[in-house]
Length: 188
Ligand SMILES: *[C@@H]1O[C@H](CO)[C@@H](O)[C@H](O)[C@H]1NC(C)=O
Ligand SMILES: *[C@@H]1O[C@H](CO)[C@@H](O)[C@H](O)[C@H]1NC(C)=O
Ligand SMILES: *[C@@H]1O[C@H](CO)[C@@H](O)[C@H](O)[C@H]1NC(C)=O
Ligand SMILES: *[C@@H]1O[C@H](CO)[C@@H](O)[C@H](O)[C@H]1NC(C)=O
Ligand SMILES: *[C@@H]1O[C@H](CO)[C@@H](O)[C@H](O)[C@H]1NC(C)=O
Image 1 (cartoon, rainbow, N blue to C red):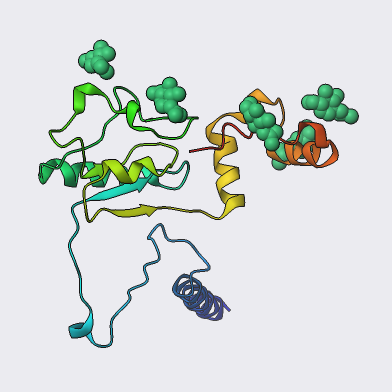
Image 2 (image 1 turned 180 degrees about the vertical axis):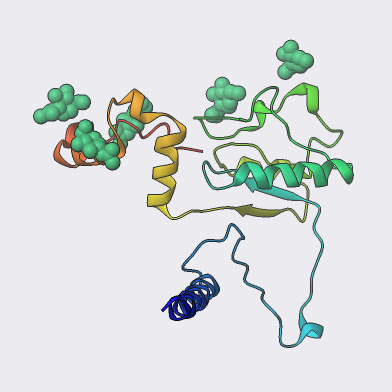
């Protein structure tokens, strides 16, 4: 009996390990490693990669934009690029849209133009007039419900509105008059 028990025990372990391996390999169990998609070009010769050193990065809240901003700032620092910087904090023009009078004299350039703009702002056409030729314009968007969930926790709306997210949503849905109370906070 003892022998059979051990045999069964061993069989259970094998089955369990197989199951875990199966679940991990199909991503049912998060392992802490990010799932990476490797895109391979079928004809690498035809892919042209052009390096750019001029970037306007539209920084968006709760979209991993601080991580990307940090990478861009380190890159720009290494390459000695000209940044359009705020005098303090992380914002250039908010809540009103960007205009050229927001550029600090402390960080001006000879031609009045810049290679990098990676801080929070609200987009306006005037941004184009201060970026040097060849600038690329990029941003990060996130699925809106996940973004709102993250925003709710980051800004401690539970304390501000004295309710959790579930309660908050059902309140807003049943009371149209308070539906727009948070519109300012959710701008860039
Ligand atoms: C431009 O920005 C400044 C703040 O730096 C603001 O006082 C001014 O009203 C803005 N101008 C326009 C046309 O929005
Ligand atoms: C320049 O930076 C200093 C702080 O280093 C600040 O006190 C001052 O207001 C800034 N000047 C302008 C024009 O933004
Ligand atoms: C949210 O708050 C409501 C009302 O206080 C409560 O009934 C509910 O259990 C809470 N939900 C969560 C997920 O905490
Ligand atoms: C609806 O929201 C407004 C504004 O927050 C509040 O004054 C009012 O009492 C709410 N009405 C109900 C029925 O909860
Ligand atoms: C959003 O907030 C601004 C500033 O508080 C307010 O003037 C505006 O009416 C609000 N928008 C809506 C759609 O309620």
